[in-house]
Image 1: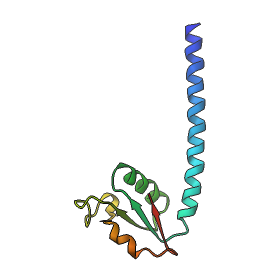
Image 2: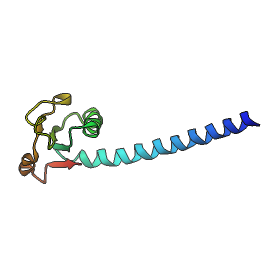
Image 3: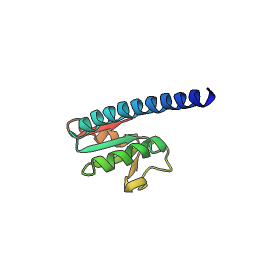
Image 4: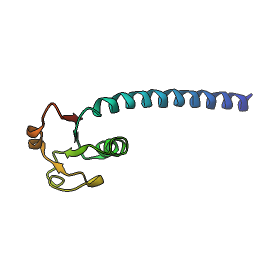
Length: 104
């Protein structure tokens, strides 16, 4: 009985994960379609979440102009991951609502 309970538990975990992955992919596609309409992408935060966003976006939408925005002055003015330059929040004043999107 123990072995069968373990098997059933693992099957439930796999089913749950498959559902979550499908949901994630669906949400990601909606965001990609939204971002596709813009020329410039400002990613607020050059930490792990910003890097993850840049990784996905650069792979799926390589033709966009990307910028990191970060409050860490040590990162500002530097080329970071994927050769994306990092700026402070003052760079956001240059954003044009028609061709730019900010991802937080």
